[in-house]
Image (tube, rainbow, N blue to C red):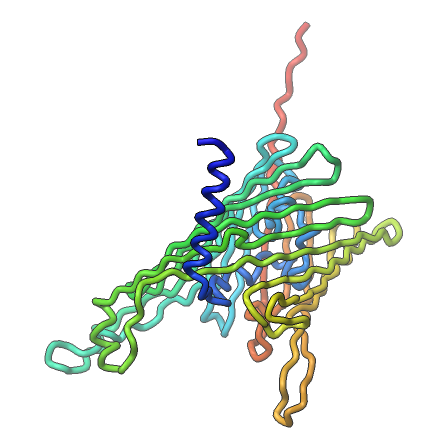
Length: 365
């Protein structure tokens, strides 16, 4: 089959899929919108243009090829609701050659040890607490990234395929697949980036264990869910970053990004039925490539007060970073739940650059 036929077949497939599932869920797979790494969280998620390490495997795959070392590893842990909700991330990347790199990222958002009381009553209708079990409600994202520099100086691109697995104990599970892609272009002190999330739309196929749910749902008057497909529509994130040199020791990077969604009106700064725009801004002040102070602002919204007046609110974030040789330790305090009434979370992340030792070649006389 020719490349043209493959391309047309792909267009037909995705076009047909979008037509068939036009009732897309607006907030599907939101766990993949939280963001990874304490550095990025401290910057309010404004890193699409400047990201240049292992976390580019999530934020913008174009920047992955700029990572340092022969192997780079990133880890993160955060908790929400007094530790009830756990958010973990791990990633690894390596070069193929001087112009290409690949990476793997894994994300998990979960509530563990949830009591399962569906079998609380025994055959005689008596309460038996020994019959209580526990289960986890967890979302997993597996991201496979490819990044490449082009022949044009400063221009690079990348893409990743993501496999999604969502599971609620024995009650329900889903598998999904999607594609994301991004580009970056650097010119002097400016860096521009564009990230396209779910560019083909991401499809989750849900399967419910009706045998497990039927009796309890009937007793409680709930409707038994049906197997089906959940669709995540595309999102576009452009960004621009500028780097300042402040004396011999200090460096300042600022970046402005905007999330463009096309799934109807959202409560963001600029909104319409066709497109909604959610801008966010971040800065990083670095000292001697050792210490970093970060800040950001995101999730700008208009909310109605009790007296019917309207106020504009925003969510700030702060972060600190320490880099010692090939190890980076980052901390941020940010609202990863992205809601005004949710407490802020403490986020920690580590990054390791592994550089292979070069073998010494003995002199031949």
